[in-house]
Image 1 (cartoon, helix red, strand yellow):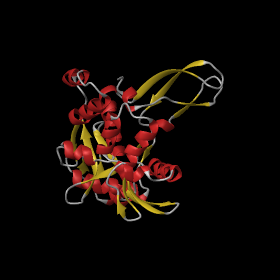
Image 2 (tube, rainbow, N blue to C red):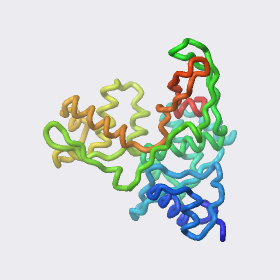
Image 3 (spheres, one colour):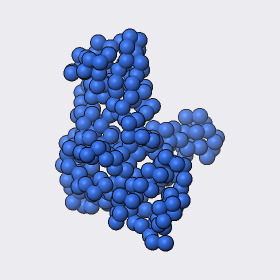
Image 4 (cartoon, rainbow, N blue to C red):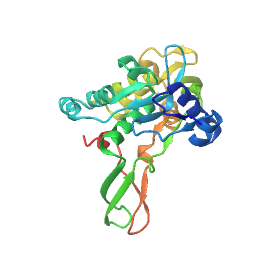
Length: 273
């Protein structure tokens, strides 16, 4: 049986990954169905949890990243804002999305969850999968040392279908058509360093709500007129449906009292920024 390496045959790799996602089988089992032996994926291989829609509407599920070097470190050190840091990490660390060499348009249209998955993969390729933390347990008050394995401890939420990135949210009066946040929305939020929590919510809604009762959303006032309850409902649906690494859900048992501790994981923290 011939072997396949994902980077050598991305189209077949995509088919195998889609079979895994849709069919509840292992990578090895799916590969066997296609008549190949699937080799272990390298650290630089990424399965996009949402998938990138190219200009022809094809769903791309794979990407490749690389380890960051001293050249990258120097460039990152000159970045003045979190938005620029995250942009540089993607620009320098992502080798390709499917067969595409990514540009700014690619990063803008990638789902935010896919961008987060790529950033996590760059971190693992650069620093490895293990993280050491010293935290104070909120239950027993003990200072404890904990280890996180980014492969084993971080859940990766995926979208089953490309169409799942668009959804309808019933409001108190009517409905809103909503899309999952993309890179352009994520970048705008990172650039809005002086905004309040409510203003950030407005900004996210402006990027994600396409229409309200069939009227297109054309600016921030279009989502400001929504009731607080409706705004909260839309934001809850976005959070619930958003794919990608669930960093804020990582918990580890305290070795002293065995109670779960919520771990303080952020993308910036993973890169020691």
